[in-house]
Length: 131
Image 1 (cartoon, rainbow, N blue to C red):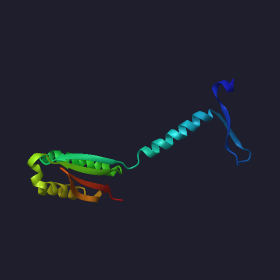
Image 2: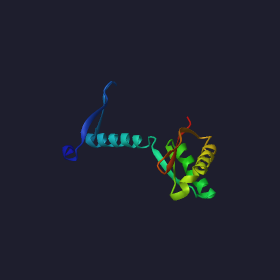
Image 3: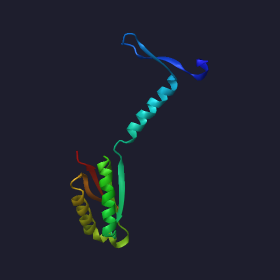
């Protein structure tokens, strides 16, 4: 009857005297161990992106910075992306000012990995948690 249920006699501690064995479903146990291993790797540092526009309001910017702070405290890297449309591209200096303000706000929990850089009509800033 134990064979029908898929139960196995598994040696848990072979070095003890006497050796310790358990009756369990070995295939199910292996599957659960693999799942636990995958879950532990899921929380590795990932890249989170926060998008901004030049006309993002001060309050909205504060909320986005708060979200970034939460991501950084969890160990994630955060990339701020500012998108310029039309003639906004002429005001890159305002974008740099906003990014400088973000860096100043997050200075306690983060450091800059890649400073502000412009590619096409996007300005990006990559920050990582301090450790």
